[in-house]
Structures are given as C-alpha cells and as structure tokens.
Image (cartoon, rainbow, N blue to C red; front, side, top):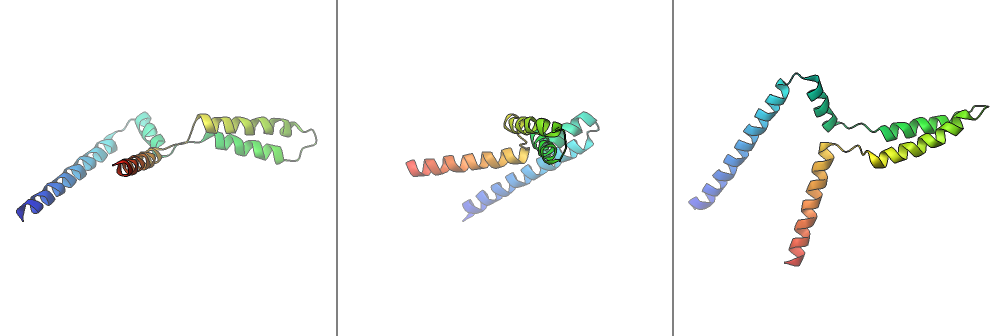
Length: 116
C-alpha cells in the first residue's frame, strides 16, 4: 500500500519543483529591463507576418480603380512577393512549435504502439 503512495508523493514533488522553477523563470524574465531582450521575447510570442501584409497591400492596389493602371502593374508583383515571403519567412510562434512537437511525439508513439 505504501509503494503507490510513495510514487504519488514523488510525482507531486516533481510537479511542485517544476512549478517552482517555472515561477522563478518568469520572475527573472520580468526583472529584465533591456528593451532588445523584451522585443525578442515578444517576437517569440507574436510573430510578424510580412508576407500577409504585402499581399493585402497588393490586393488593395490591384482593386483600386485608377485610369493609368500603375497600381495594377504594381499590385500583381506585390501579391507574388507576399506569397514568396509567406513561404520563406513563416510566422510561427513558440506556441506553434510546441503544438507541432506534441503532434510529432504523439504520431511517433502511435507508430511505436502499432509496431510493438
């Protein structure tokens, strides 16, 4: 009877240690006053998507009526450039990376369970 209780207590200690380390990490991050560090950490949480913005501007320029047609000539290449930037520079955040890692581990575990 005491063996399952000891296992449960050990598991709870690990959870407690993990929560304590995480709280200390967040406290240390909050103490940082460097604007470059804060900007970098913010980029990990919210990534910019320059390709999407360029595509939107290109579509606006393409659909704005103009007699000379200059905006139509500029809008098309802007859309293409925006699509290229979308493929080249993805807007993945740290949260997206965590989800993809979790999905990969799940699929590997499923594969392992089917093989064994």
